[in-house]
Image (cartoon, rainbow, N blue to C red; front, side, top):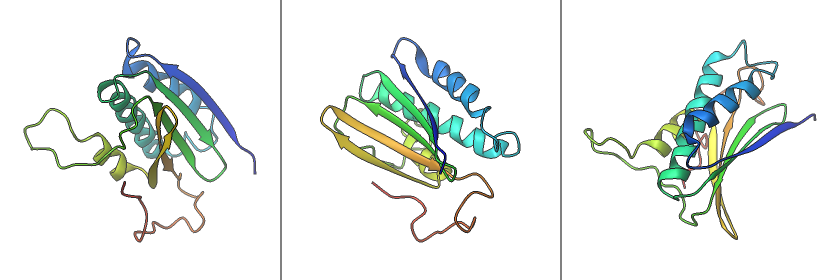
Length: 145
């Protein structure tokens, strides 16, 4: 297996847009990105949501790591809050509260990992043609945390 990865810290002052732009640049180097624009869009939306959560809820910088392991693009964001992410039902008129529900809907799976100082949330995206059987497995497609 060949794996590649990139890491960058995004301070609150730098904003979500910088993280999304950085991720787009690195995704463009992956062989599947041009022929899987929907997957790229899903990854970029998840990057935006995860960085936003780190900045807004953890009030911390966001350490973003992208890792491609030849089967899944892992999008990991570390923040300083020990509180686990929770998908929730937002009121229809609410301006926020949908971030993890969006990640849950777009990613093939996601989980969080508590760490000594905070947590890391990782979402996995499998481009078409790269999954074990390339079929969605609804029995556990997304880990609900």
